[in-house]
Image (tube, rainbow, N blue to C red):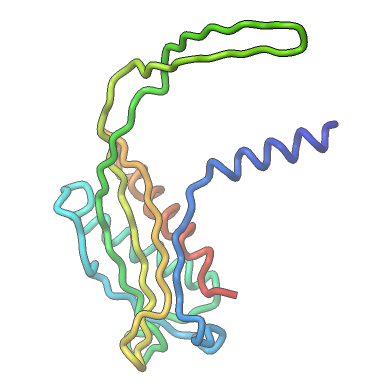
Length: 182
């Protein structure tokens, strides 16, 4: 019973974790790639002042270097196998409170029952902002995109520099967990 409970909790927690969107060229031998460079300026950045700062760009580049070095890749200024590029977007979503009111009625008979219910949402709708980071791996030989990973993270009001650093590190680590593909 304890094992079954542990499996159930693990399943629920894994379902709540964010999903990284990954795409790549299946014809590339990723094992042959050993060196990389990083384009320090993003390809695209949203106009939102929370992410247009050079501080955020430095955090992302630092996190990319950290994660790739852990995987055994070597950073070089030039003559690299790939160049890492990134995009920062802000995506605004609408959420509503999860509360609702329900009404129902039903009947019960000998070995059968019929029921009907109505749910009416109650609460307010509000806007949330997600920072979406896309990391591209581009071949320096062909200039073509060979791998892409994307993930979003909720931006909170009143974040501190420490919170932004943790967010950048978490986003990059989660995206690059799937690089190189196996």
